[in-house]
Amino acid sequence: MIRIRNFAVPFTDETDLKELVAHRLLLPPQQIVEVVVVRKAIDARRYRGAPISFVYILDARLAGGRGAEKRALHRFKRDANVEQRAPVKPFSVPQAGRQGARPVVVGFGPAGMFAALTLARGGMAPLVLERGQDVDTRHADITRFWKGGGLAPESNVQFGEGGAGTFSDGKLTTRINDSRTKDVLETFVAAGAPEEIRCLQKPHIGTDILRTVVKHIRKEILRLGGEVRFGAHVTDLELDADGIAALIVNGEERIAAREVLMGIGHSARDTYRMLLAHGVAMEGKPFAMGVRIEHPQTLIDQAQYGEDAGSLRLPAADYALTYQDPVTGRGTYSFCMCPGGLVVAAASELGRVVTNGMSNYRRDSGIANAALLVQVTPEDFGKEVLGGMALQEELEGRAFQLGGSDYFAPVQTVGDFLRGTSGSKDFLTRPTYAPGVRSADLHACLPHFITQALEGALPYFDRKIAGFADARAVMTGVETRSSAPCRIRRDRVTFLAERTPGLYPIGEGAGYAGGIMSAACDGMKAALAILAQNEHNRRHE
Image 1 (cartoon, one colour):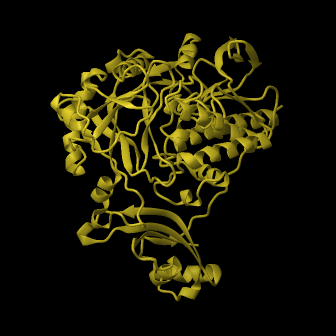
Image 2: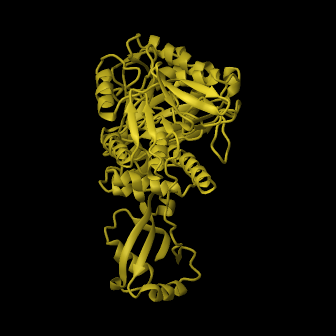
Image 3: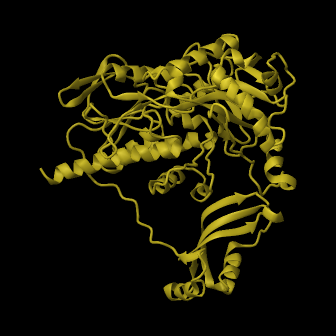
């Protein structure tokens, strides 16, 4: 096949891609047998008056086979955007088979889920232990909490089938360059995700569809011989001279284990403490905290699309903003931007308030929201291993009290925040956080270095997106769980934890990923390392 890169098409052009490709390759349309969209992005920069365009990477198959393709490529040998498509190496999983005790996967978020799926594909029949509940029970518990019911500490936005990403936006964008991302996307599509995620530059599934997808992946793990247990909280470890010997579940059940993949997620604070108490090598690391900000989606659409805002051919617009304080050098940035979404209550512990963002597949709420985060370094929390976690807990407790101690969240308009006042309820959009909100001064629950950075960033962001710092725009506190505040140290090749043989820290909670895709790939790579080692052992027995 012939690959065509940087193929820009005005977004209003509805001409069939086969016809457009034929024109690009100077061929009659009937010679184009097939066009496959490899990547589709939006270019809204309007450089020198150019229209908003869809920019493609396309693979074209020609009538006449390799001979016709060779002749076409010869005509474009000086064109860097037309080339022979490189052969695609199929993804394969070593068939190690099960020997001795089955591997145990702790946590059923993206890292644990894809680790378990990979192990199951390799014939190792893994056991998955997830402290939270299955996604349907979890959805019911979360809905009840958002409607004012009690928080379920083991079944919430953080804990349960699919992990924290299930109740976010299902964003699949990633900065990692890993061939396994294709297999992750194909797995999602096979489990019911939209086929477009294969090619979109910024793919997303949406919480509503993702709930079904994770169930189907679980069923595939079961079909392949794995086992998934919910309500199975790993509360302790047993270690011997060879490393991991057993896991203690729910404080009483002992499960023998020699290979344990820890995909615990960034909110498993009790597990962090337990691992540290057993001497597992850990370190504090930089992360970020801040608030959520909301705007009308039309404001963002108009800023990004101009006069074309509102077109049904364009998706709800997003943004990515960064700012570095010229004095302190501390960075502030937007994170987990959710077009057409809402701000959600993401607490997992009693007496604490945490926010997150969520969107369904259609992104049609009419409200845009994003986290505005400020960099936090180990120097900010005393460089202690779990000092960042303690700081998170402190701010979440402050937010809980400031919101009225009933899981309402504290909110403040941008105008009040910048003026140092509070109490305004003239909101640009109605706050979407449920169970509810109370007007408060966010300076009272955030440290000075965060509020100072936000005060500098907001006017700067307003220069990038007119109206971003509108005095009536509402900010909700606090956003603390953007990433893990610590890292479980491991070997780069074997994925084994330092000082603890048999333990494989994986995913975002272990400090090695930053989203669904990178966490899924991390879990896969650790599982592949185990499969490779088991296959090696079998061949040399």
